Amino acid sequence: VSCNLLTAPVRQGGMAFPNIKSYYQAAVIAPLLTHLERDNRPQWVTLENLAIKPFLTANLIWLHKRSRPKPTSIPAQVHLALQFWDLHRKKFETAKPLSMATPIEAMTYYIPTFHASPWKERGISHLAQVYESGKLLSFECLHATHNLPHTSQYSYIQLKSFLRAAHRDCITETNHTEELSIWEQTSLTCKIPLTFKPLSGCYRLILPCQHISGFTSASQWELDLQTSFTEGRWS
Image (cartoon, rainbow, N blue to C red; front, side):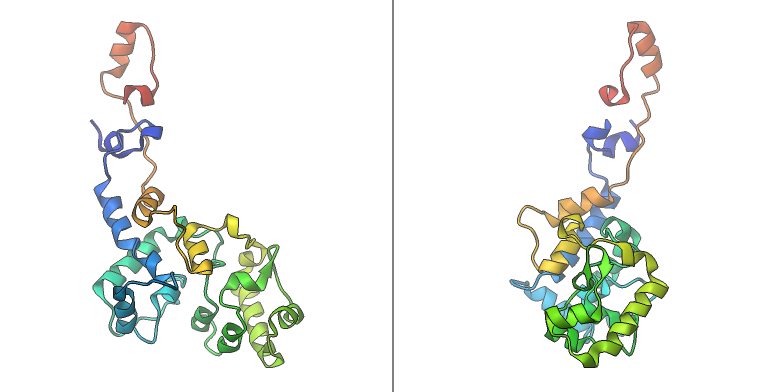
């Protein structure tokens, strides 16, 4: 029996045996979701963040690898989790090339002179909050809805220029919560959905799609039986 047949999901005609490689990677990535929560964080999250201070893992995961700062000291678990995250990040994000769940303070790594503090103080914590119906809100609108001070207008121009120049496609992305991934929703709400199981959810996302090939003797058996079966039924 081929490895593909063993590890493919039943709905794809497989036998649903665990894919050890994918399961291991999912087990390493899954704890990152806990970093996105705000309340009831386990103590190990605090310890990991202290180890990479002044950086936060919840910010680092949304940064592209080339723009992500490199802490002088980083726990092996976090380092490995970020490696696997980068390997599969397209499966955890919906907006390309910059996720709507990107924290505003993380923009300082893309724009070194960007001042995120006034934005956070007025409740603008993520990139999704500066969009509406897929379009970037004007500064006047942000000033009216969030009381963003006029002193932040230069920061707004920096952000707008960056998004249009380096991430033009992001301008047309929608920020409707129901269209975001579980990871992006958790980043925005700071709470993991009760029905979502991080380990199994990660495993299903990163499990590669398998092409199921028939058994070697399948053709002869079908000929003898004078009938044919789908690959799913053969499994």
